[in-house]
Length: 86
Image (cartoon, rainbow, N blue to C red; front, side, top):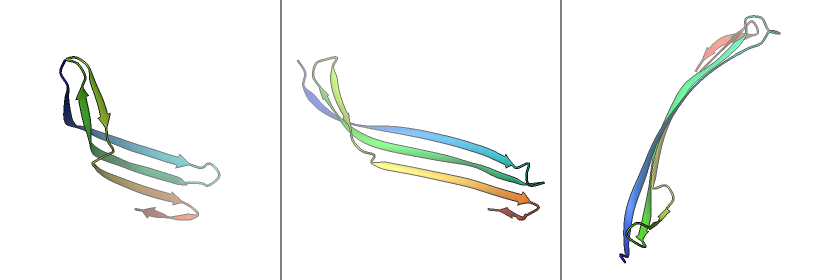
């Protein structure tokens, strides 16, 4: 029967993109557009205990490192509004 502790790290990488355009029939020539994307990466550590040759107990801990970036572009136009970008 083997008993040993191990330290490990898990990582994840994710991404998302979005696009939304809102139109309003009550206001002529009105629209509101949102475009953007985001990416993120996480690393979190853990501890593993080998109970038998084929059985491990694992415990993941809180995030050690989290990095993320978000970019959003909004545009709005209508007869009651001036065109804005940002």
